[in-house]
Image 1 (tube, rainbow, N blue to C red):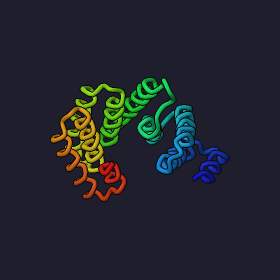
Image 2: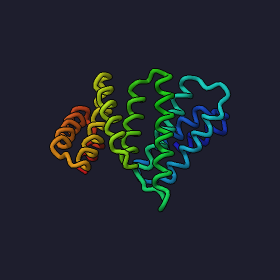
Image 3: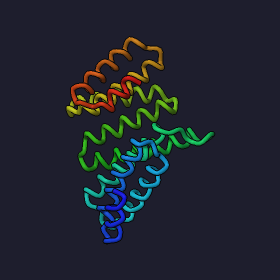
Image 4: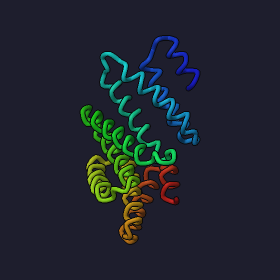
Length: 195
């Protein structure tokens, strides 16, 4: 991916290069190199934001970039004293991604942006708002038939309810998430459930 991105940039193909930067960043997140992922995502965002006449595909790629950036604080803690600022900035990125996805009528992706925003709000301590958003997202994903997104949202709601002292409801949602992750064949989702 690194070589392909470099080749595309040298061939003056910024759209294709920026799309590969997102793919590269997703790989680095999974490997655990979050600073490198953040650097690549910011490069991608710069490339897509600089396009004079962005196509719907370009806008969807920018939304993906923003969503990936917004998820970084869920993987790595912010610098000391910067947690609240980092979470608020990530919430803004997730919101911007959701707006773009809705404009493009990409309902599944918009709901996944909302799920990310809900998780970020929970980390910020805004549990009532997080719960409301995650419950709405859960209903949206049910209507879209998005099993993977539904599993992630059920997991997020379960975590939120457990921390709010509602273990019975949390366990019900966790069981739902596990069942959905098994059905969709998501080992990564099951790993989150185990954690």
